[in-house]
Amino acid sequence: MSDEADRRVLRALASRGINVDREALTLLAEVEEFDETVERVTESLPEGTLVLTGEHVRSVLDVKGRSSSSPPSNGDPSVSTGTPDPKPPDGAENAPVETKGSSVTPPGSDDGTALEPGADGELATRPTDPIEITGDITGRSTGTGEYKQFVSLFRDRYERLSAMLRGRVNHRPMRAVRGMPGGSDVDLVGMVNDIRSTANGHWLIELEDTTGRFPCLVMKDREIADLVGELLCDEVIAVRGTLSDDAGIVFTDEIHFPEVPRTNRPNTADRHVQAALVSDVHVGSQEFVEEAWERFADWLHTEEAANVEYLLIAGDMVEGVGVYPNQDAELTIVDIYEQYERFAEHLKAVPGDLEIVMIPGNHDAVRLAEPQPGFDDELRGIMSAHDARVTGNPSLVTIEGVSVLMYHGTSFDEVNAELPESKASYDAIERTMTQLLKKRHVAPQYGGRIRIAPEERDYLVIGEVPDVFHAGHVHKLGVGEYHGVRIVNSACWQAQTEFQRSVNIQPDVAYAVILDLDTLSVTARSFG
Ligand code: D5M
Ligand code: FE
Ligand code: ZN
Image (cartoon, rainbow, N blue to C red; front, side):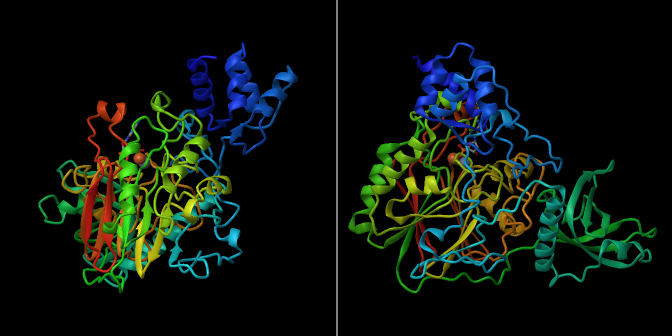
């Protein structure tokens, strides 16, 4: 059996969001009516099947001509493509291999810890646990893709973000503003529905709340015009201004973001203890820098690393299968479970007494739509080395009293594309992360490249101001600080890929960012 035949099978199944075991791979690589057989096999799979086994293939090959009405397994209704319509996801032909995450089994159920479902205060801690986790979607996904869930998602976003703005403005609902006389001073709080430039080069921002929409004009020669460049659709802002004479438009004087207050003072640990922050390991990729990872693991055993008690990994543990077109040509391990097994081996190389927390990224085998739940039980089993803690993307992880917002960073590509270079860029990714802190949302824009799941609650709102914001995804090292919040992008362990070469992305490879939890100062250590 040739590699090429294997690849054909993997490609065909990856495009349907299905993984394949060795036996199924062997069987399918040898069939003659390839396309038709793959079609029949995938059609016959029970809904929700994520791994195609030899048994599945055999059952179809044995019962030739059988037709099945069961739907293909990749129609996860909770995955949005950015439109509320229940049509199949855009780019579903490139859907990565994914599992459902632990949407049925909450974390902690393995050790019998009860979970309180619900809002911000939710905890998923073990009794003697030094780690506390909140805002984790794992086990709480209610998304079924229904239109009304998008309504409740946006309502929750609006309510929580507008509450942050309420202290600064005295806003009225859009409907009430409609009835006010021309010339009145008005404050509005709304979700940005549209940003347009007028024929004269001024800006027209349409804001929306639960009672209606209202246009706000920002004159191009005002200082605040610069802030228009920071706006993303679907973020929540406040506007302060004056109604035009006909009361049809607001002349804008001020724009406010939900913000991290200037007076914010971060919490710190009360002893000298450190955390190692890493991201984007990409095990299974030809470009995974295995030796550098080994140097890092070895270093963690040295005296110099004696205070490093935590290891936080911000997603993309493995390279995955079918994440990007033609990605399979750059894989060293083609089976998703083998990739995780290999990753687990690399995790075992770090000291056994490290507390490890990890979230998934866009290459990992959970649903792509955000918020992403933590891995399913099978993957947790594989990655159980050192009792590593798995949580959703994003999650707020508190260690030694320091809260760390862990978010993979998938939205950064879109934010970088939308905002001017001076506000968001790959070469200063801490600026992009600063923008999201100001907006108090990790992925505001809906309907673009980021898939957002229609949950009842918006887990992507940055509800509590974190002490540290840790992300990855863009494979660029970035360190910054914003109103007391330490910002870290911990880069990657994958050398430049073919795609990155083609678009001239120069990744920062093999870094661990060492964070002092008692001072929040950081050192980026290179293991390359
Ligand atoms: O992506 C790492 C970075 O590279 C991130 O900024 C996206 C970008 N990237 C990498 N491969 C592609 C393809 N094929 N299309 C578009 N953008 C890409 P990561 O997802 O962590 O590998
Ligand atoms: Fe990555
Ligand atoms: Zn990524």
